[in-house]
Length: 345
Ligand code: ZN
Image 1 (spheres, rainbow, N blue to C red):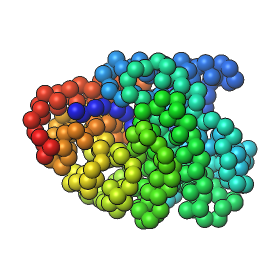
Image 2 (image 1 turned 90 degrees about the vertical axis):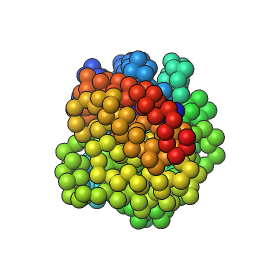
Image 3 (image 1 turned 90 degrees about the horizontal axis):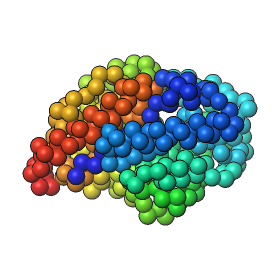
């Protein structure tokens, strides 16, 4: 009950890359960089275990960015000539590579860090991949000429890597789709279908993470414009409830998401965001347990997975560690407090 996990990313140590940035530059190259990525992965597995999390991940220490880390292993993408593009409906500008030819994987994408993580933890291992809709919103298209067609092409590549990650021993494969909260109609019309292609044939647990983005200024400014009630999830949750994807995340703590939207996720496991990633203030175990209590009004106990609202990549390392501890301690408190509560009791 109340198994804890993080959304996915964690801060990179200062000896690995620039810190507190979304697209940090690596500080090393070649074999030294590879070794440093491995060291950082092991460090964060240890920190997650020590904090008391039930499900751990690689903290995305081996990728510069959660989307471009995947794209680097895709043939048909020109990384030499990046262009500036407005992403997430022009919320912010990013330098993105261009799709210039049919897409094909060059080989394995995340074998190194997935196998390393698997060899060093006995806990459940979650691995994250970018979702198809979010990928097509983070790359420039000079070839397909159609968002959906390109998303389905990426979904096939994701499926190939996801099946290989499962063979590596990963227990949960999570697709990250922050763009679902921006292009709600596309998400409902074909984004969920693309996800199901990406997850086709998987027998491990499948998950989708949907959020309001990292705690960076462009995102906190955007959230200011969304009003008092954030109902974006309401458009896509019915499609997800009818899909084969097993776990769905939503932001909860410090967000304006009406908690009753959780009820739309009928039989799904729900990763409930109990940790704010846009504030350095550390949640108390009581606050975390209170948020779990809110979720209990709409979900049975066995379907609640306390989680962070989004990734912790742009935060300071010290704050991130304390937030991991708050997450685990809050879930432990909730296990005592709500041993008998909830609609599933
Ligand atoms: Zn997120």
